Image (tube, rainbow, N blue to C red; front, side, top):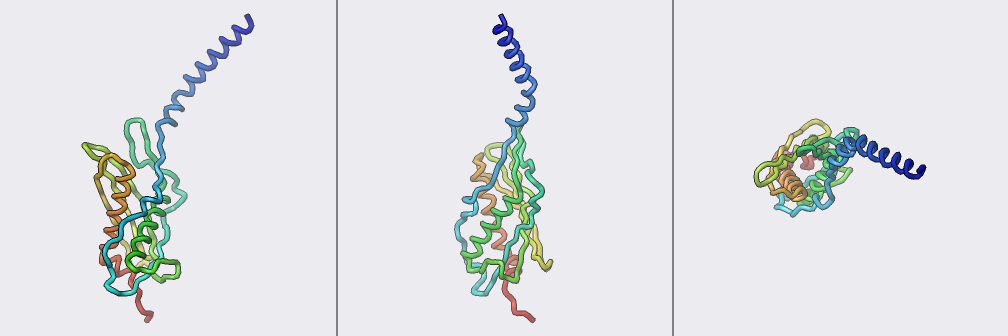
Length: 190
């Protein structure tokens, strides 16, 4: 009899624990974290952008790492989180690879120090494709130049393809911007 009573108490305890924890489990189960991969920084090399002139740059992550993770997409009860510091690191890797491929010297020894931030990445669903928006902010450390690039792209519902394609467009936009190219040209000291 005592065994049956213990079994009944355990069963009730399990049911109550299940009901009591159900809201917590629903909230935890509906949270997703998206981290950019190093493969996103592997982009194809484009045309030369310097016309034989010397250029160098040092790209620095200016995105606050204390911001933690932020929601970038919601779908019903699902919330998708990401870390903008990691996105900035991925953007820097992509920019560095492309700049080096174009003959730009990339390294901390450059006088052309550029601060990089990705303050926003968003994915919105709708129709036949998801739309990804990325905001990329570049600013010379000496304050002589700054610009915000806003890139939007629609590529199916494959998250990785959509984000990678948007990052590629953002990098292409930067490399094709005469203001950015001018900001990283090596100049003789007066």
